[in-house]
Length: 227
Ligand code: PGA
Image (cartoon, rainbow, N blue to C red; front, side, top):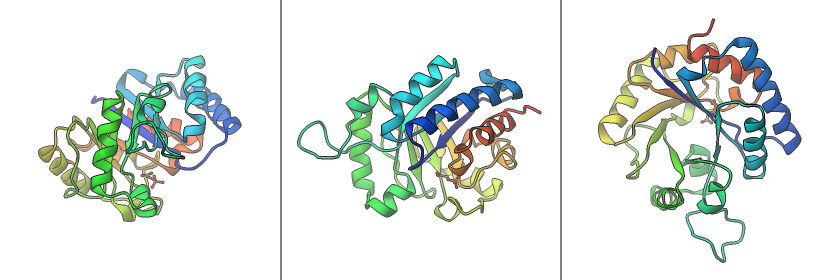
């Protein structure tokens, strides 16, 4: 069975108390589902305010889940009020998501800005999960993990077909040096296997389905063939 990569994206959700409760529930649910941890790499992409809490709670729970930030500053440290640098993130996380369609849409992040963010993240030692809406969008050099996320499938309950997602993922793989390319957009415990069963698709990036720990645990289990 192939190794699957799963990156759950909380988006702008969860307080510290809610994050602590989520980790406790994830531990309980994954234990009862007997998740095959050696078959999966699991990441959870959380708000800056809970990065360290989630990292510490996961470690205390002995859960092999990595933490990611959902954005990074295009600048280094200095007079950039409100920005969070790669160096700051690296204290709490090994990963960062760059170029999510919501960042592009609501915050005007262009390919050029996203390239700068990728350079800053990489120079801070962060691994990048870079999101693209199709097979045509540029992917900056050095990106290890790409997520293909058609905009119309995000948060809508509509997915791309596994066949088409597989074709777009193959295109992305042929154009970039990314070793892992995922599909994202309305992935659920019920449909995850249809995507990860496809030969080119290495994993998934669920949003809504990562918010409730029980659902996320079922998604992880279903992706690696647990009953
Ligand atoms: P969704 O979000 O699973 O809720 O559609 C996907 C995403 O965050 O990209």
